[in-house]
Picture 1 (cartoon, rainbow, N blue to C red):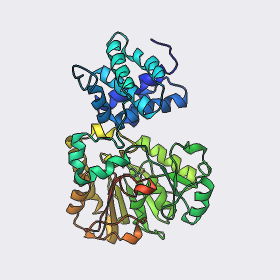
Picture 2 (spheres, rainbow, N blue to C red):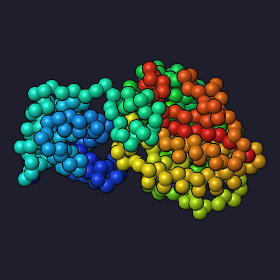
Picture 3 (cartoon, rainbow, N blue to C red):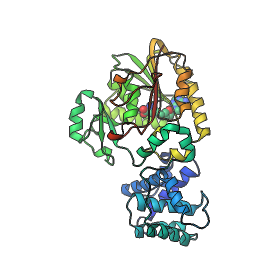
Picture 4 (cartoon, rainbow, N blue to C red):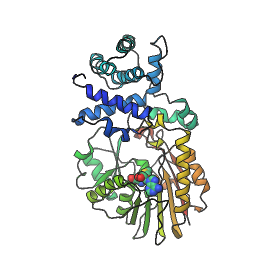
Length: 410
Ligand SMILES: C[S@@+](CC[C@H](N)C(=O)[O-])C[C@H]1O[C@@H](n2cnc3c(N)ncnc32)[C@H](O)[C@@H]1O
């Protein structure tokens, strides 16, 4: 094994790529195993950044590699993935070529090192560059249709950092203190790349990290004024915190013990209160109906592609159909748990119609149309009164995640 400084981060980046591309894991799922043994946080961040950029630009990196080989390398060949990592570093992370060669070629010890070196040198001599926007995989482009060309430019870089404030009345104060901008009361947007735990206000629980789009479902339930809400599929708790901060009596249910640990930490940090239940929503039954239900359903999360570019490569028709089936079952149950006049908000961070529009169309409750004045300036509801966001919207302000949101009343 090589002891070149920087090698462990590259080996971890290769493991991350394998986990995503061969085993269909998320970068989050793969990280603990892939990064095991790497002590320094900057090395762990580097491994994630290399793999993230290689996945974000995969189609374009492959096109470059294919111009420099006589025989096309197999899609799953290790040498192709190592070359993707090498090029991602020079073209996206400004790593000097000699450092890339020294730290990446040992990944191919006993294998086609010379081939990789040759392809990398050829492309470096040609001074190749990447396009302004990443090219989406064909299957993704087909699925997203007309939206794909708007979304792709927004994928060129990781997104800004959005915070939701515990007290919306302090919006200007926190925007000033943290040097950010606000797109609506209770929201502050910062430049990316900040270490969250070190920012003012984190320890005292004045805010939590939450993409602007992800903050909209809970906002659409308005102030709670002591009424009851079921936050169904709630962990790690961004929406539970919002609802509790906005005067709701929150029952917060999720089936993942691990994710609920983070929810408990978030409640403790912010001093907010919720009744937390660990249960499978497909089995659980409430004793009493609720004034509101927020179902932020499990989904393929393709709307988070700016932060999680792995979704561009591991999500296909099978995963979408599986999630759509689960969402339909959850919705069938959730809509029965409301008092007459109670409101349901259904949301997913997916860009797939099967998980959004198609689900909303099946709901038998009365639509409660979303109004433009409830949304950040520049966003508008669809003609059905639903909200469909995607990363290409609000481009001057830095975009937002892809979400589908619909509201109903019983
Ligand atoms: C989109 S995430 C929720 C994010 C959360 N609402 C927030 O704002 O932080 C979906 C959640 O659904 C949970 N989940 C999936 N299937 C479930 C089920 N059958 N019962 C309860 N929770 C489930 C997952 O554990 C996951 O935490």
